[in-house]
Length: 279
Image 1 (cartoon, helix red, strand yellow):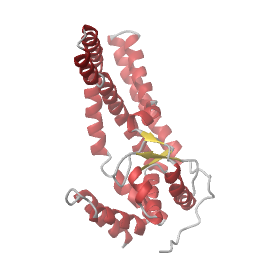
Image 2 (image 1 turned 45 degrees about the horizontal axis):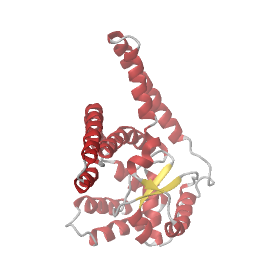
Image 3 (image 1 turned 30 degrees about the vertical axis):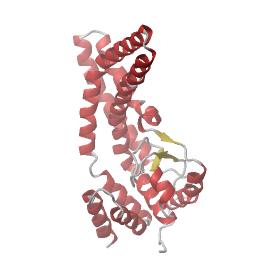
Image 4 (image 1 turned 90 degrees about the vertical axis):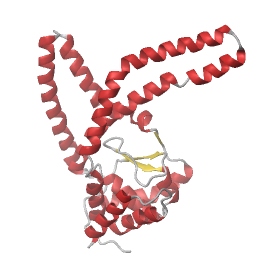
């Protein structure tokens, strides 16, 4: 289906709105953090304020841990070949460039939103979607990060990445204990059980240190999920404005038809919303 699109800006010309929007969010966070740090400093001189600013610095740097937290990777040879043309086409229609495309191992249609200049696509979409449908899904993912829509993505990364990182730390701390126990049973040597004891002690210390921050991060992540509930609809609207609406609704409906675990009501509602936007 031909797409009739406005010419847009030349490729590589940034709109600037995303950077301004994120800058305003950081400035607002800075004011709030300064107020909290002042209060903490009165209760715990010096270190109270330092701890508040250190926590905020970690939140600002949270997207740097996206590769570990989300588990994304660079496209392999076949994926890169399929993505290259579709991604160039999407960027030309959006009038942007400079975004990095990464792969998230998932059999879903849409991926997460790791960071401001990174567009993620699922391995299922990259390997199996026809070129037009793949371009539409990429346009949807780009729609999360353009203009003022970059603000929810930025805040979502700040809020959810600490949760993922702390959960990864807990899993990593406890993961070696099971295999080490099996080896200790096979060896029938005290040194093996001593190793299990030491690993369990380290994991317990890590859990004690991480448990409260992990619980708070999990609660914040649940709150972010509620606040970002409309993010998919806004990204779909952006993809429609780019001219990829027909292919996107076709990709969503194809996913509905081939869903193995019952009728996905969220996708059904999404397809209905896309069809309403397309008129």
